[in-house]
Length: 69
Image (cartoon, rainbow, N blue to C red; front, top):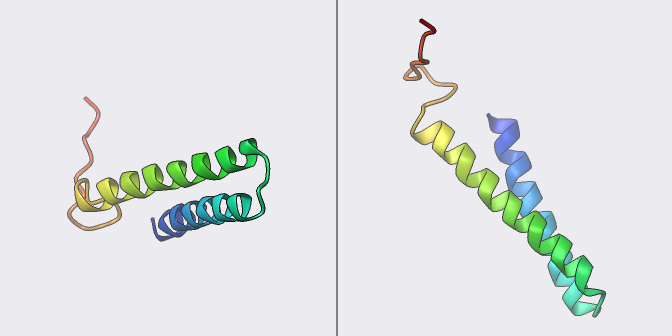
């Protein structure tokens, strides 16, 4: 889960970096859009990882998976 968390924060950081560079250099609108979408995907991924680790207790001793019937 640690690798997924690092990838989520990196995805968000790259997206924000692309948006800032695109705005500073007055690049095409689609490049800004790419940055915004990357940042948004990273934020959603961060939220999902937090839900998995805080609520579902994935990769901890508290995790109780549902058994198949």
